[in-house]
Image (tube, rainbow, N blue to C red; front, side, top):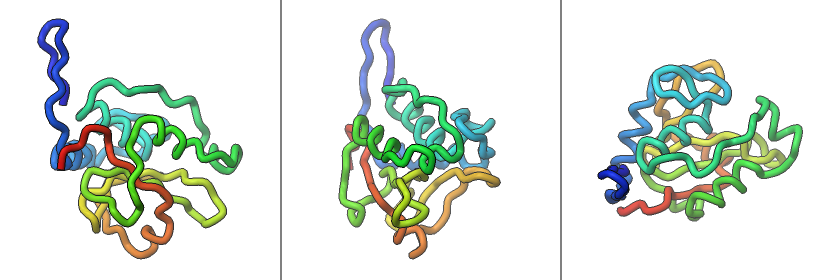
Length: 156
């Protein structure tokens, strides 16, 4: 959380609990492609962007416009590359609450779905046709996990 006192900006410690609480506050937000407005609409990236704004402050970069099939059309790891610019990479088997998870739909596809772990066994995500929800990270999801990242400045 960032507090402002005149021109002085003070960064309070960022905790995993705060990240999960912010992500949970988005539960029920309807899916809306490219959106990132709590209670109104968001996609999976919009959820992560909203958690960043709620816990850290202004987004470090605006995402470019993207179509639902952007990953298939470009064939680039654009989401992972953006995450590498702003998040801290961690081992996929070492993620915990508050970490960002990137998934591939198939082995040969680029990672195009993102979620926030709420525990080592659950995650919060947005997906087409449903509202933001918290679900179990089943073996199906674990097989598709391609990258894991921590938000910068997280204190355990």
